[in-house]
Image 1 (cartoon, rainbow, N blue to C red):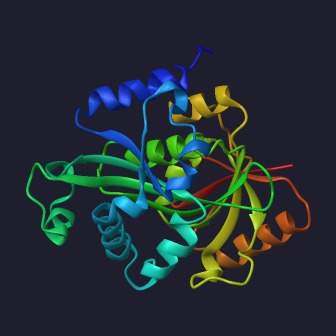
Image 2: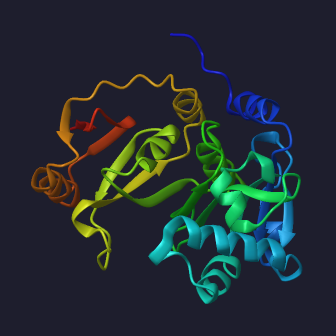
Length: 263
């Protein structure tokens, strides 16, 4: 089995393939020194949210555009995103965005724009972050996976817990970082509770993450379940909550079937 390209080499290739894209972090100014602004050896720029209100407003507009009724309110963005943490951003010329997004923001082709963004919240458990919001408006580039990985690298995250829906295309992005260990249901419930689950990603094995990002991670499911089989998927979460080791592997869902390994 050949060695996967290092994460640094893969990231360099991503930016080389998409000239004009740059990596930023947006958060409270006091967090700048706590961030790794050379994630995977690549340069990142920290922008204090207090002095970059136009960029904050653009992120807010994009989040609400993407998530509609459950988009982040302004006070949540300030109090629970920017004050305790930082949002990772890929900035690009507006011409690279989807046309409907560019029109929604009212931007000219060469105006700077947010092409992709990821926010993971700090938790009380050291090294563990909680995935909150992933946005990508650069189709066909892999930007969603890269902004997620680079943001987590800037945060020095060791583990990630996130929320996803079985039938959501974002599952494919999440498994780009490696197999997802199923944790169970969302604490407190969720708007889409019957098709939603909590997963955990282990970020400590850089070789495995590199293989996953290169789509070269060997994964043979021991079981598949249709995304529409909600009773069986609910039973699967019962087992995960009871302590069973259940993993969802790359590409997450294929031909409508959740790709699983148990035991």
